[in-house]
Image (cartoon, rainbow, N blue to C red; front, top):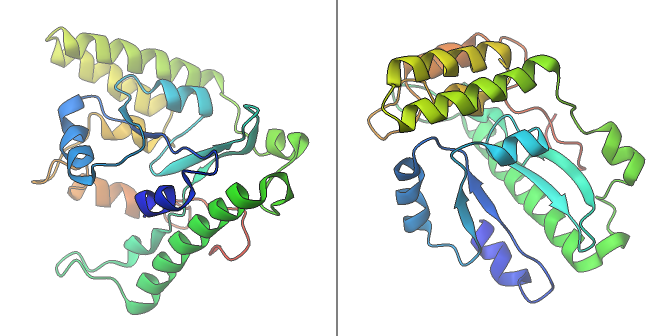
Length: 222
């Protein structure tokens, strides 16, 4: 999806930078190698990008123009939570949820393309005040959470796993909306993803709350 978009727009002063949020580099590396993107794909073991841009989940995106100005702050990059209707025995989604998921991705990708082609004339951009109003600010708790996360990462790299997981757990407690932090100490399934029963129980506990908050973009599902 992103490679196709990059191929179409790379000659128009456009670059994609993909960042994996994984404590262990080897967890993300195989996925990147299989995808073999032509654009930069980085592994952020310390979640520096998440901390700087207030990202709490994947996939999320920030649109930054050629002057370095954020014209759309962190938001879900075309994601939709149709997976919550998935049958966990057959791993299939209802047709309507699957169609909505595919449409959400296509709508978001088309909006990025519109921005690249039209620049400031695109109808999908926010001005400075609008972008600022839509930018999540760090709370005292989330700032403390990142401190615990960094310490947990340091301890992991020095073989002190028990202490590390205590700090990662505290980071998740302080910043419960950050799925990216939670995943680092979560139980992994057979493919190495944090999508075991523990994950599904946590998703169910959301109730009516969103896993992927709706994107403020024409054509995106609410």
